[in-house]
Image (cartoon, rainbow, N blue to C red; front, side, top):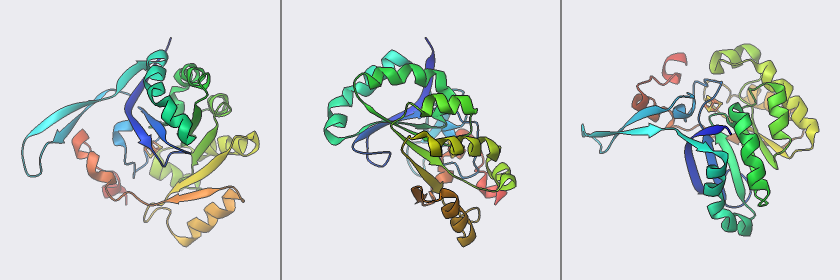
Length: 235
Ligand code: SF4
């Protein structure tokens, strides 16, 4: 049995799919988006975050980020809200980090939720090997597929990734029959200009696409991890 590493379980979420949901944030991501507002979700390692307890105070406390779960234990935890999910037409959403980076664990967890008829959604950057993407996503009820940049050099610069990996997976997704929506995080000075918007709309080619506003507080967690917010130096 594999274990899965999670950095947050958020109950009663309303914007991660239909109905009332529980969103599970998986720890670890193959990308390093300069604007990432969940930097504690990037490393696959368990980390310590230093949180100030009051503004202007030197008092701080450490918080451990990352917890390992067996599939059985996590399913039991998630199913605590099964009645509320069912009544609202909700379910569980896998987010991160990159949930597909823990695909083998997901493949153990998902049947445990599916046998209780829990609706499953995933938020993914799609930067994983195609076989991995296909095996997991084909079992999902709904997919939020990130689109960040459509130019390979810009994608590399701002995320550290290889755009072709994402495009191969998106190409499969379009014909898979799995319901999906594209999600574009609008990043000032990166992809929020009119030309980029037109390119995203053309790329979507009639598929649903959502444009998400930039999170102005995105940099707040970096100092707590002893890191510098990349947007402050790359921009
Ligand atoms: S894909 Fe998401 S979690 Fe990963 S670095 Fe980018 S914004 Fe952060």
